[in-house]
Length: 104
Image (cartoon, rainbow, N blue to C red; front, side, top):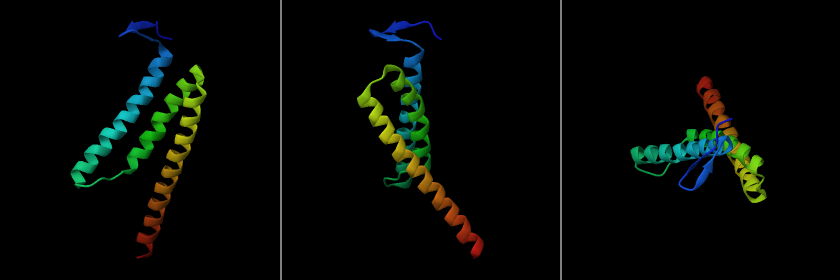
């Protein structure tokens, strides 16, 4: 693991870096969604938003299990379930669109 160090009064170790990586993925999903919406001229939640949500939840969840915060843990479990469901819905839509385009 990484040797712990202190920055701005916070001790940073490998576990914190795992959690920060997950938070960075959450940040990327918001920035990407913002850019996507600006280009479209309206608020849109593109599919990559849900994939980045799943990807961000995994390292944050690993961190939460390490620190064992029950509030944070429950929040991550519920959020992960919603993100996975949206990925499943998106993949189902893509599959349906492919089937419809093959019928025409």
